[in-house]
Image (cartoon, rainbow, N blue to C red; front, side):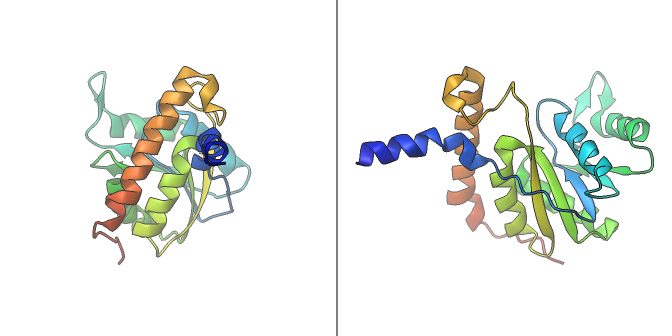
Length: 188
């Protein structure tokens, strides 16, 4: 019996990570990270579908690509692709737990109370728990941007999916066992 339960739990390890409940909001926030710009383009589509009128892109402020600041590259990118509808939120630390602190500063400046967060599918459960825990003054909903190269819920059928799933489970467990118990609500 325990073997059957273990197999069922392992089989659903990928789908457990995915939270997909987008709701109309004051603002769409694209979390920093990921391996490409799929998060951003999914957020743009959601904005065009009427989920929110504005979008905020979190960018690791210390990043440099080909000699250019990632923040400046991102500002130029959003100005070209969604002029007047998007802003960039510079984050100083590259973890979801720490990102919440910088995101709060940008959210306070925006006046938004309800936030539709766009992240990679595999990252949505951990992001939801961290943001709801650290920023309880906001109402969050989540959209998991699909990226079939890096993740699928049938994770055992593809080497890269398995690596992503196992890596995200490691981060999720760290959140549950360590970071969750650190002080650090970002409430103002």
